[in-house]
Length: 463
Image (cartoon, rainbow, N blue to C red; front, side, top):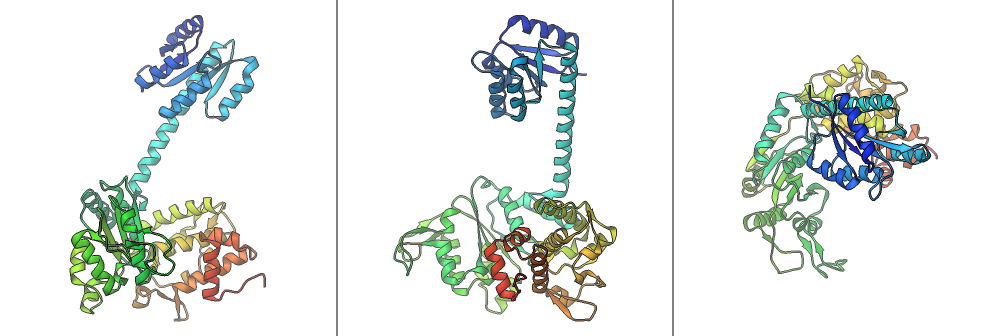
């Protein structure tokens, strides 16, 4: 068994000699330092130190300053302060700043050995637990994408393969499958990971706004252009540009994007000066672009440019094995976010979620669990805490489900918008009409809440 190495720091030589003798008798390897500066040199050179025992009051760099200097370099091992009785207050303050423990001089050597052994043991246990947590997280997560199913592992392998290249990637997937998260994973696996990942939702912008956002504009280019503005392309220079919902881009703008991809140059709106950038392009769509080409709504040349690599994100109903992992992940997230005490789901509730077909995919699952955590009365989420659409719900997939309509027991359909209305209405009731609190629970801004209330005509519970 390897000896534990202790760094002892004290400006008094006699104290060092005594401590070295006692610790050596206990089987420790001891390294001594007569000042904080010498201790820092030792700490820089030797990374296998198991604990530091340092005097609080020393000329020059004192014990607490030494601790902070070590922490700046790397996470220090257990750090024990030795202090006289009159400076116990300072030692207590040192504990608040992260020091592991303190001993009062003159030292009780039996207490020293007990404290030292316990600090090292606790530190080793905490490191092992942290390592285990990292292992578990790595086993079920890839850049925050949760999944252990065969399909997701194949996607993770694909991302690790294509990530380091500069090849353009087109991500196919239904709404809510996590296309933006996958684009981020590709960026993090690339050689551009230290540069920016710039995101644009094409479907959310008109053609003129999209052009101004992507290419930027110069002063006077249009009414309201009171100065020059750099576009997202220049912002993403040497990084990655992610264009979401590219299938909703107009033909006119598709031609402009194609020209940029062919020449890697563009002109800001209102300018004739060409500019060049170096970006890696990732795009995503929930449409079948081959059908869009046949219908005359998408340029085939543009598809060939953006789809060097194609990745299909499966809907949640095609990777049911991942649902319990996602459920546990989101329940843990929302219990912390909403300050609730929820341990998990009942067996019946979990089985119901696994059998459900999730037309809204992971996004719908997140909303469902946020609602369940917010409205839960006990520590376990039961089937009664789930939205009504989960009761008496057939598990087979149908055309209406794939279109986002879930048949209920009466045979009528519940649209995804109705799910959102139900969640907002119940959250407002739970918060007694407090919109700021409701918006925080829902994970949206107060402005967004007002907009949704107006769009869905949700009445104010205070009126």
